[in-house]
Image 1: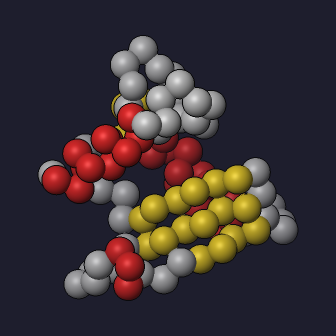
Image 2: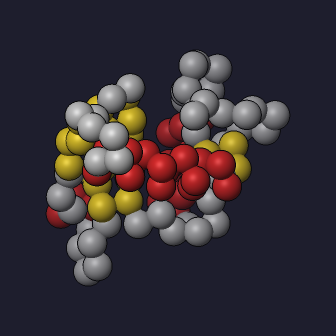
Length: 92
């Protein structure tokens, strides 16, 4: 719970900028940062802390490839998530 509070406090510094942030009560098991056709994915592995997890740089090169599959997964999580800031629809 402490990690969530720290993250929300850091996100508060970005409030008002053109950025969206959402959270969920479920566990995503990965961190994803998407920039158009590039994506940074960090899957969370059992028995390891975040800094020990692999980081993948995905670039979209084809339909229904790994990039599109991760993007569809993230879209579903985003749709079910709750905006960090009240009254905000967030960015997709």
